[in-house]
Length: 445
Ligand SMILES: Cc1cc2nc3c(=O)[nH]c(=O)nc-3n(C[C@H](O)[C@H](O)[C@H](O)COP(=O)(O)OP(=O)(O)OC[C@H]3O[C@@H](n4cnc5c(N)ncnc54)[C@H](O)[C@@H]3O)c2cc1C
Image (cartoon, rainbow, N blue to C red; front, side, top):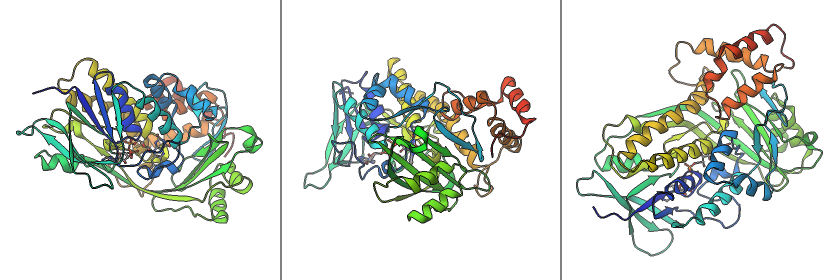
C-alpha cells in the first residue's frame, strides 16, 4: 500500500491535541479535524460545552502535559493561571472531614479549561507538519476493499456548499469525545462493537465565575469536597486565570443544584466546605450560572475485541469518559498520548493491539477510583466486589485519620491526582498510620 506518512486526528479538543503532539514525532503530516469553530482567544466554544465548568488539572496531568509540552506550565502561569500547593493552600473535605493542611509540593494550577486548550492548541499548531482544520465534520472512514485497514476519513466542511472530501492517512485517531462515532462506524464495517461498561451517576453541574479579591479565602487557592454516601452533593471553588474563581456545585443521582443566588448559597450551606457558600455570598459574580448534566461514566473495552482494523485508534473520552467530579479526563488523555508516543518509537506494527492493551492499564486506576467511590452510593448500579464493604470502611477511617496526619492527606492526594496507584493507600506503613490516628477523634468534622 502506498504510504502517505500522514495521520488524521478526529477532534481538536484536549484529547485530539495531545494525540497530535504524540503523532508529530513519527508522522511527517498530522491533520487534526474539528467540526467546531476554534476561537483564537481562550474562550469557551460550542463543541466543548463542559468548558464552561470547573476543570481541575490533576497534578499527574500537569506532569504528563509538561512532558508533552515542556514549558507549558510556565506559559500558563504567564497567562495568569495561579498556582498553589495542593494540600497547603486548598481546603479539602473528604467524607465531611477537613484534610489536615500541610505543604506537600504537589502543585495545583488554576488554568481554566478554555485557557488550557488555547495554550495547548497554540503549541500543537506550531509543530512542523501539523495542520488544524476547523469547521469540518468527519462523516466516516475509508478502508481497503477487504476493510482490514482504515485508509483515511471522509469529511465535510460545515456550513458551506462544499462537497465531501477524502483525506488519506496511514493512521486515524478518534478523539471525538464521549459522543464518538467509532462504535457505529466500526459496526458498519463489519466489526463488533466494543463491550461497554456504563455506570449511571446522573451528575448535574452548576457553575459560575466570581471576581477573586486578595482577601478571599484568606488568600488561599480554593476549597473542595466530594460527595459521600448520604450526601450526594459536592462542590468546588478554585482560583483561575483572569483573577477569577470558578465555582461548581454538583449533585449526583438526580440531585440538582439550583441556579439562583439564594438557592445556590443554601445548597452550598449543605456542603462540608463552608468556603464555597462564603464565595457565593461575598464575591461578585461575573456571569450567569450554567447547568450541565452528565448521565454516566462509560468505558469502551476495545482491548477485548478480537478483530480491529489496522490504522485506527480511539483515545481520550472516546475510549473512556469518567464521572467529571473526579477531574480525571484530561490527565488520562495526556497519559494515553505519552503511551502512544512511546509505542510509536517501536514502530506501527500491531499498534492498535498494543495501544488498547496498555491504555486499559492506564485507565484501570482512575476508573477504579471513580467507580469505586461512586459504588459507595447504594443508588449506583454496578457489580460490587466482595471486599468493597471492607474497603469502604477503611477509606472512611482513612479520611477521619487524615484530619490529623498530614502524611495520610498527602498519600490520598497523590492517589487521586493519579501520581501513585490506589494500592499505596493499603501498604502496611499507611494502614498503621490510619490505625494509630483512629485512636483519636477526627480533628474536625
Ligand atoms: C462537566 C464536566 C466537567 C469536567 N471536569 C473535568 C476536570 O475537572 N478535569 C478533567 O481532567 N476533566 C474534566 N472533564 C472531562 C474533560 O472535559 C475531557 O476529558 C477532556 O475535554 C478531553 O476530552 P476529549 O478531547 O476526548 O473530548 P471532548 O473534549 O469532548 O472534545 C471532542 C472534540 O471532538 C470534536 N468532534 C467530535 N466529533 C467530531 C466529528 N465527527 N468531526 C469533527 N470533529 C468532531 C468536537 O467538536 C470536540 O471539539 C469534565 C467533563 C465534564 C462534562
